[in-house]
Length: 359
Image 1 (tube, rainbow, N blue to C red):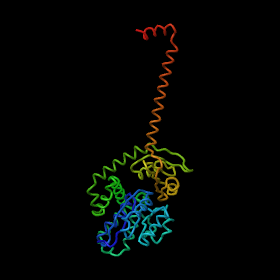
Image 2 (tube, one colour):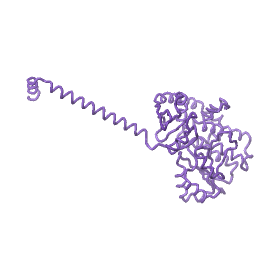
Image 3 (tube, rainbow, N blue to C red):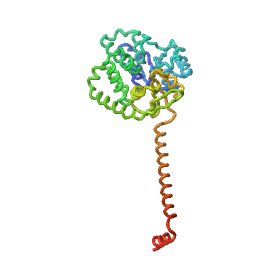
Image 4 (cartoon, rainbow, N blue to C red):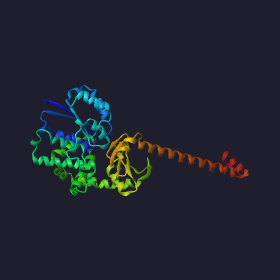
């Protein structure tokens, strides 16, 4: 029976699954006396998830809590952690918008081993693992294999796969392919997918899925081309934005939008329930997302949630426009009919009435 039971809370993107599953992957080697239990949730939901879980009887069974790829926004959440778990809780997060808050709890916040490299949650977990007992039990080849996967996740999540001039072309391709595959599978299968990649290694998994990867790349290219035809450029809060709707490939859409529209300060990609923001350095989109969308992130890449459903708004706009079109046509028809009757000679009108009004 496990001596320690650790609860893992994390985001639901590739980095959010990679961080906790890294621990679960290495559990047989490094944490023989530990059992991990994982919960993934959307951005901005960690406080609610944590509060709800704390109220359950299940929470009393756990010895530790690790929060990954997110930072609680409420002081009450930190109060609960300190009261229930004392020093047995850790935060593995890298988002700049919550850096000041994590600094208040520096003893429980994991920092990157190399501050010159943009970290992700998965790379923070990897840095931490390398300082833990029994890491040396991991074979060198296995260390290299996992380290490469960690780097692919980190590079994509921080967008270094596009911005770092020192990355090799193969690393860029692999990081892109890994993230593409992740979003191809439904959310309920995300854990299984990431776990399979960790278990087999990237090269083997990539080789077995080359046809699927090529198909996804071709589909993405068509998707970007069709959606980027509908970009709107407008000024918001003193900054010029390129705005476009896209439910898929949001990061890629935003990046390409900035390439095609160098005059804008940032890209705002709208999806059914959330927004993704990307900047070319002219605007801190993390602060913008925090101010207007209850979100956050990095200075050049952030996200948040919508208070309106753009699909419903669009549907209602179509209904309203169609109703107006119908009303206009009915009015035009009534006008035409009344004009015809009004213009008839009285004698002709009487004859027509006699002809058509009586048998």
